[in-house]
Image 1 (cartoon, one colour):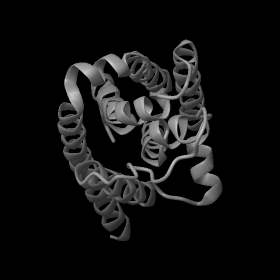
Image 2 (cartoon, rainbow, N blue to C red):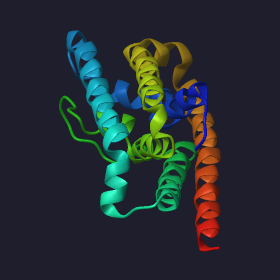
Image 3 (cartoon, one colour):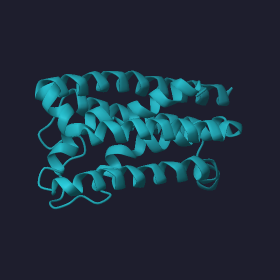
Length: 199
């Protein structure tokens, strides 16, 4: 996963999917007091950022501890990402991650798995494990991607009204198509690395 800083930011934005999460955030925060919405969004983004940051630093030791290889992580991440991308393209009434609980959301499903989902976790682990000497760069890329995500989600209501339901659906499907391509690339890299190790 030899990527530049800009590519890392773009990939992280795609896997965190702030645009695709706008309808979910608007829906779940509709019954929350408007004065509380900003605090809830900031809190959920902070939790997601903390979780992803932890996995940046402990990802590689965790892989060693569990005996997991880069190919297995690539393939698993690719499969999960592909399934999520398909649900984004072929939208279901229950949403990407299924049914959600009532009341003010806390951690689930906004922070996890909407922002810090399995694919985002796999992505930061792969980045850190492939190039541990660029750890500061990965942390900065994650920070930039999360800052953009936070801004987009803070303006979720306005964006939703401005773009409209059809516009959001089109954007989400476009993100799904991009994620599908990334998923296939992850799968191919995992298979290629695995075959290379067998030789």
